[in-house]
Length: 146
Image 1: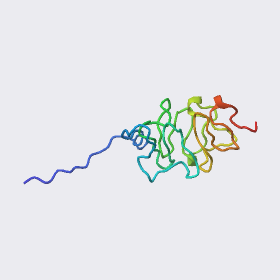
Image 2: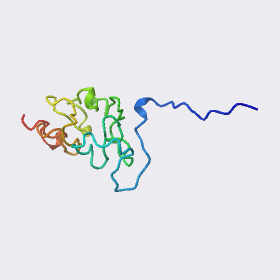
Image 3: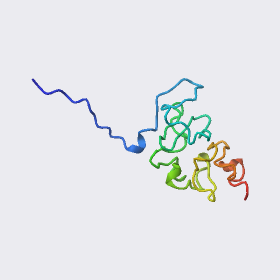
Image 4: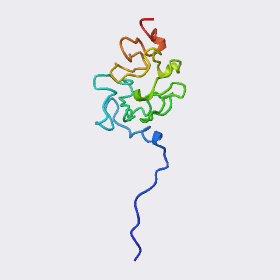
């Protein structure tokens, strides 16, 4: 009699690729794949109202969107990037490059990190922090006090 076959398989994906996509969900519903992930901060808003919510420790986005911004790159909860020219996403990992691709949103270099105590991070003109002004350069100054 032969020994039982193992059902464990090796996943060839890297850690940064594991949360890029989630199963599709019903149109119009705004929910997370993992309820324990929540928002960037319970007092904060959504990364993009058309693309659900993200938590820096989870890296998940709305299954109906896949990526935070379809024109950007991967979301790696361990300090990945939205776009290689945009810098890091996770607030604990450093600054978001102030000269990043406008389609990914910008952050005032004097504000530095995407602070989890800040407000909305909405590429369509949300705010990282009310004192930092608009995120998207097409919406006005990056820092309202410049």
